[in-house]
Image 1 (tube, rainbow, N blue to C red):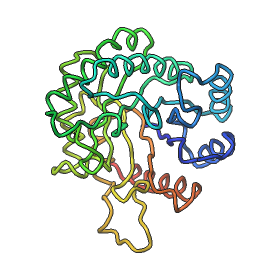
Image 2 (image 1 turned 90 degrees about the horizontal axis):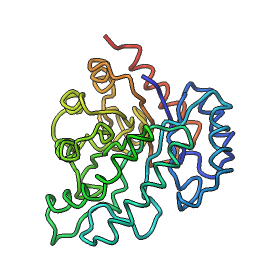
Image 3 (image 1 turned 30 degrees about the horizontal axis):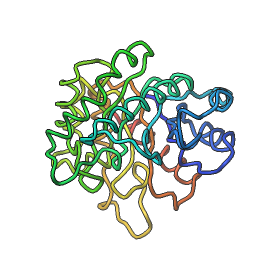
Length: 281
């Protein structure tokens, strides 16, 4: 397993500061939110792309890929019944694929709940059909670029589309390309209703990426002073299941509560993951 950090954690820090700190702890990969480089992927300059990739590689790290693909954008939506919007969204994904490749990445995690949730007068099946219509034209480009889209199931607290890994699997099967696979996230899986380890094992054949975190919105194994160990996910079975399926992809730390501070999040997440890793059997 390789370990990465999602770069929005660094906020407005200079690139080198956040990257060097992450590398000091042991992270070797970076997962990039496009909005950290520019609000419109199509308008991120060649110089910015080259400079960011160089800043990462100068630390002996690599860009794993992109996530938060549609966050902070306007006019794009995955499941809408508006054909023109879906076509525009497909075209925007082409720019994201190019950005991912330019940065040296090979996968794009598709979460972005606000740009995929569907209204009450639409069914999940209709939303899925629209999403398939949006993504299917990308398959030849993805395959040519060597980039994969990783569908991310999200819990009901985030929205109503693809709440379960089984629903993402259905969509993956319908598209039928090895360039559209599955991403799993501890925070999201905690609402599946079955053990996280079981979700991982049941989907080992299609999973290509993984987010380590906790429903408390912190890093893996982290807790607030007011919380007990019972309030957080036991990470050991999570990492044991990744080991059991011989997962060789990347584990990226994604947090949503930055209040402990960048250094604390990096350090405690790293230490907790390595503690689990060292106990694998």
